[in-house]
Structures are given as C-alpha cells and as structure tokens.
Image 1 (cartoon, rainbow, N blue to C red):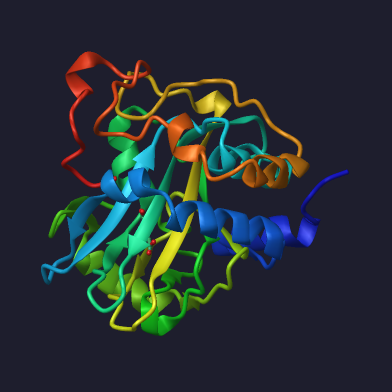
Image 2 (tube, protein in one colour):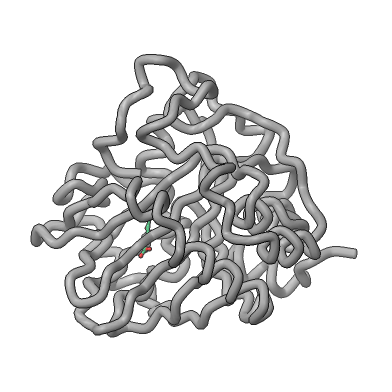
Length: 283
Ligand SMILES: O=C(O)CCC(=O)C(=O)O
C-alpha cells in the first residue's frame, strides 16, 4: 500500500515540496520535544552558523541515525516509505540535524539549495531530499522555512559563502523570485515538510520569545552512492523500523544522545581521517 497518492507525488514533482500535517502524532512529537529539549549533548555539540548580518543559528548534526528516538524518527517506515516514493527507489540516511533557532537572537538561513553543497561531497545526481519535522511551532515571526515553489526545476545554482553559510548566487535568487512563488512554510509540531535538494529555501531570524527547533532528516537515493568518500556517508543500508518503535523507544527515556555519533567530536568511521575535524563550512 503506497504512502503517497499520485496527486501528492505530482505535487512534489511540480513544486519541489510536500507538507504532511500531523505525520507524527502528539505523543510521538512530545517525546521528541522532551528528549531534544532535555538533551545536553545535543545542545553542547551544537555549532553556530552566522548569517550575512552576523546573527547565529545553531545546528547539531549526526551521520548515522542510531537506535534512540532520533533514529526511530529517521528510520520509521512512515517517513522512509514516503521518501522512497518521492525519490522513486531505495534511500539511505545521509545525515540528520537538529536546527536550534534560539528565541530573540536566532539567525537566518540564507537562500540556498542543499544540493548546492552536497554536490561537492560526491553526489553525482540530485536524487536527494530532506524531511523537516517541526519540533516547535514554526511561524513567520520565529523564522519558519520559506521556499520558492517549483525552483528545484532551475537545477543546481552556484553557491558562495554568505556569513558562515553556503548561499545561492544572489543575482539568480533575485530573478528566481520573479518567477517562483515565495511560500512561508508554517508548521505545527509533528508536521513534516518533504523537500527536494534543489529547492531554494531560506528562513528568517527569530526575533520572537519562542524557540524554533526542527529535526531535518536527509536522504540520498541508494542508486546515487557518492563517488568519493566525504563528510557524509556513502551508501549504508537503512534498517527501517516499525512506526510503533517511536513511542516504545521514546518512553524508554531520553537516552538518544548516547546512541548518536554527533559530528565534530567523536570519530566517524564512515568518513576518512582527514575529515575527522569539526565542521567549519556549512552543513
Ligand atoms: O531550519 C531552517 O530554517 C533551514 C535549515 C536549512 O536550510 C539547512 O539546514 O540546510
């Protein structure tokens, strides 16, 4: 039984994104929220990325999904099954990250395509996509994601440094805005946005008193195994888990950080030794 209808598949094909409201139910979402907000390792290992104006947004990134609640979200059938339908074949976990956009001070993400930099990591084709799971409500005033609908059809644009981030060519972005509708992706906790790796997206600064955290799980098609080793894994079979494991593992207590090899500190055996250093470029 497919997870997505043909209408949803063609919506993704046309627009480069798809929103699944309440993909995760309130209990699953609350377990994720409670785990993440209580997770001192997640906080401690976060790295800042300055936007063009110098404000910092934080993120914590890990390559392998692990067996804790973060891993259950990234590996559960309802998420991975959808991803496989969107990318039309087997996928594997490329990495996950928690975006921690802090109240009042959280910086922006400049306009970019994820494939703008994944391209440099040996991924030959843009057969990649992400699932952004809202941990906190994401509204315009706390810096929700914004996308240029259909902009993945542009193909990959050149990127250069924007603050500490990889930003798409501003001239092209400016022109693209005349052709593609700018959509604010406001999400409630548990809502999930699937988006194509060439979709132009950004998010504003957080001037509100509310945090805006989101977990983003990124996948690559198995048939797009990177041709060189780089900072994210080459093809590694993804062991899917039953959706019920989210609650089972989540209720076992907030133990996920012990299962996760956060990037930047522990050695990741999936990447070569010269890359065993904290990430300094964009994600
Ligand atoms: O959380 C956001 O606003 C965007 C994050 C993002 O675009 C990224 O991590 O590449």
